[in-house]
Image: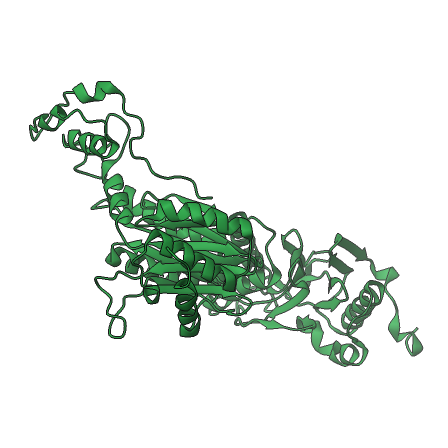
Length: 219
Length: 288
């Protein structure tokens, strides 16, 4: 925070955000909002926070925009070199491990909370959380970003193991919209990425098409 | 079967007997007076005629395009105790013959087969000092690979790392070449694989091979065993039989056997004594 200049509110571009990834029967669904803010100014209202590091492995980014972009670029390079060596598509635990190595060794300089998810032949759909400071945590579903705190209740009560693809996409969409409803640093559109054996499907659901779950009390 | 890596002269033209190489050390061509047809002698002839300076350094090629230092190192490996590797139905077997002059069974017997991680092992023969260094590097490589990629080093990755280390030593750090050759047994993607690497830095993937003393004759019996395609337990007996035929004086207790199969799912330790005793007993029934 600067104590000079016209506005003390100005910060580095940050992804105060809502990101999540959920395993379902046959793959993973990743969801994110699309707001990048520098302080209270929305720098980009349609940003894409779900970046690919391999054909079927994606990373949700939250925290400092610059830091996360740099880390993801590095991971993409290492993963590509590794997949050349092993002659196969890389696996999700490998990608998450590399993320962890980078985030932990540079923990003093980075502010990056990431979720690594994807599909590979040996493990199926997998989700790993690599939060601020490093560490690697495999879970069936992971939430991240500033908006995640507002939806833990919804997610905990509505998650079921072995959902179908449609149910999972609805689940993620609802959760992210609820977070966007309450969190000031999340907003814009909802981006969904579904990764399974058959490939990668990307969707963007704009604000007017989002489910209005608070309609019971709020017009 | 393994590629025949022997580079010794199998076809010598008559002209080479009359070569007069420029000799720094001024060796005479006295040896060339013996015009014998025996191949061994021819080999010696050939080797003797090379003592004209092309074999003094790993960094020198001879006019025929050979690096003699590496061939000499291969010769060392050829005279070392044998190591044998074979893929069975359900796993990998690595046999190694302990040097009878050096081993005193109960007191001291140097290891010849080294586990790198739970699913790979290297059986090496040649200069022991070189082997130790190689194994240490392979183990460290495995650890750092695990740290970065959360998987053990196995398969052709392991083989290529070991082989490139040998190659680098020969090409860049060429005090003398690595004088060790070995058989790598690994499981990659649930399928067993065997690689063999040579002092020149070459590595080859195969189904079964042998290196060291009398390995050529054993390789022929290995082909027959491979055709039968039995499991590890049976193959141990088959291979011991084959070894007994090739080396009648072989004491089967001097074999170190590593097996990776459904029964022994870790490549960490040699097989138990019971199997060896059973082996001995069975093979003593077969007349030689």
